[in-house]
Length: 239
Image (cartoon, rainbow, N blue to C red; front, side):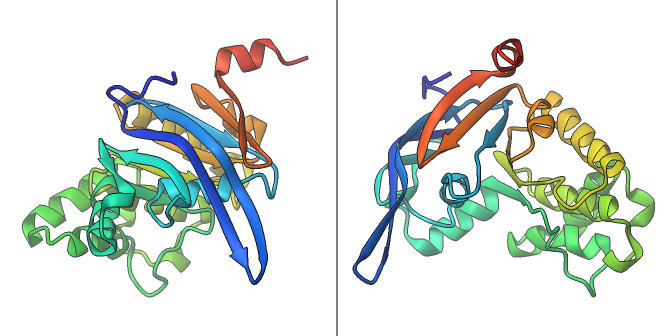
C-alpha cells in the first residue's frame, strides 16, 4: 500500500507547523502514504489529531511545511497559487459535512458551477450535470432549491457537484455527519457504488461505522500516521 508508483496521491514525510506569535504547533509530524487510483480510503482520528490539517493539504488548500505532496505525479509545492487553484478544480472534488450549496441556486446550478469555472461549453455542461444528478438519483430534483430538499438529498447534490468535473480524487469531509442513519446509508451506498465504478475516494470521519465502508483505514493521532491497514485486518483485530 505504501508504494507510490502509479499513485494518484503520494505524501512523503509531510510536516505542518503553525506559528502563532512565538508559539509553534506541529500539526503533522512526518506523514507518508500513497493512494492508488480506485481506492476507497477512510482517514480516522480524534479532534486535534491532525486529520483536518491533512485534508487541507490533500485538497491543495494548504501546503506542507516540509516534505513532499504529489497529486497525479505533480509536486504541489512547486506549482504557483494561481495554477494550484486550477489543479484543485480539475483534479479534486470536495464533499463537505455542511453540504456548502448555494442557497438561492437550484440543484442543477449548484452542480453546474465547477464546469462554469472550468470553461466547459454550455451544451457539454448540460449533459454532464444531468448525468451527475442521475448518478445520485436526483434527476427529477434538478430545479429544486436546497431548502426544498432533505439533508440527504442536499448531500447527494454535493456529491454530484464533486463528480461533475470528473476529478482524479473525491475528498469527503465527514460526509454523513449531519445526516440521520437512513440518509447516511444512502450517501455511503452512493460513494461505494461510485468507487466500484473506479472513483478514488478519501473520507475523513470519526465514525468507525462509516469507516467500515472503506477498503483501507488510515489512523492519525498527534500528527502521526499510526496505522495503515486494509479494512479486513482492522475488523479481524476488533474485539
